[in-house]
Image 1 (cartoon, rainbow, N blue to C red):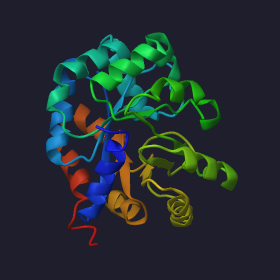
Image 2: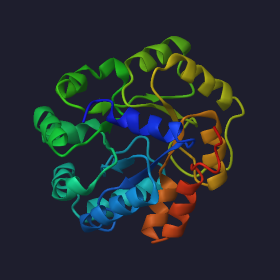
Image 3: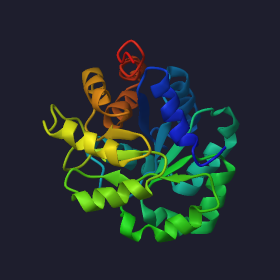
Amino acid sequence: MTKLKLTAAIESAIENGEKAFIPYIMAGDGGLELLQEQILFLQEAGATAIEVGIPFSDPVADGPTIQRAGERALMHGTNLRAIVKELDSFHEKVQIPLILMTYFNPILSYGLESFSNDCQRIGIAGLIVPDVPVEESEQLKVALQDTDIALVPLVSLTSPPERIAKITSLGEGFIYAVTVNGITGVRNGFDVQLEQHFKRLKELSSIPVLAGFGISTPDQVKSMGAITDGVIVGSAIVEALHLNNKEKVLELIQASKKQVFIS
């Protein structure tokens, strides 16, 4: 595995006439014993990669659905170390990239070097840390420099052009393009200027650009996929898994597949 594993998986989907689909799940929601079942289900269903959320007591990017899932996970005693241990127990069964989404404090508590080494050992392909801006990411980059783990950056709608250029030039894995000004959660619609924004990101970036935040229906997966390289879907997946509505998950993933996007 190389540091390009995450990028390669996304580009493979695109080359196949599809768009990347990355579901977000909250590790420990319902108990860590469900994590293997959820990941293997999403893998079998056709996910390109999976973003595994780490529950945290003070999230800054999470909307109500993901906050509630995090609270349920914390009530089960879930923490970063326990999640890494659980992933280690079945990582050989996972054939698609896993991305950990966490805040910086749990990583510091774990220990940067230990965290980096353990993630490398169990095959984690990417890391998203929304409370660490690119200007403050040096510590993380140093810890990850001898690994195959991509530090995936987020780009907001309000970032000025010079900052977008900086973020895209340093990005790894893919560019996480935030579609709304605000937290995660279901949205009825999006800014009409998004297409222009994504076009600019794709022109600047040498790696794929994926849209995330607020995407919750098959139609939104199709419309966002039409102007990006793929989508990240969080709240809708978290809620569907909580309600054991696997049919909804399958419908969302299928919306990114070949019959929708003709190359």
